[in-house]
Image (cartoon, rainbow, N blue to C red; front, side):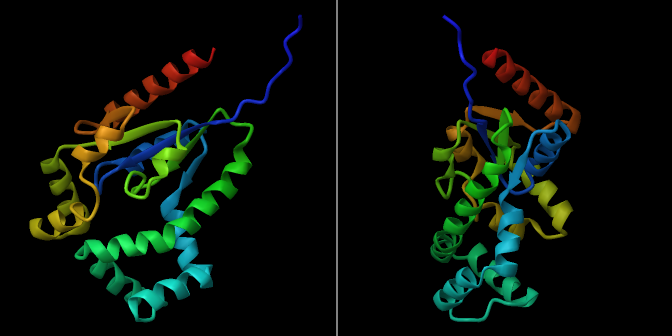
Length: 204
């Protein structure tokens, strides 16, 4: 009996991490491997530029205009320091993000893998729509020092930003694979290469 070719859906890889953990570095390396990456931060940025329905809903909830850079800076400061309002914003914005991700995934139906790069993957429940969860991990002290250096802020502000997301120690509980980024970029790349090789071998 002959076996017919069957269309196999791409494996959906959810990539997440904490602020200054190196998730973006991992994301860029997946792109270098010619693996399609859907970046939720890029989607959110475009939504703030063009989705009037979403913007109006957010403005109605928070009670002030969110049109300019300063408006968004005001909103960012508010949600960094108020977990209830941060959750409210996530509930308003992420349904639009999810919808756009589904639209973009249709462009890659012929690919073996699609990476969903999402800082709040666990917080907003998108891990339920992924086949594999990767968490880029660094120690808290490494995270703090990198964030202070990157954003030119003090330790107190760095800790405030880190605690505005689910801590990495909690995120790794949801991981199928932890990418340890406490060492060099090259070491991170080697871990990604090994992960891809392992998945490809399983598919053969």
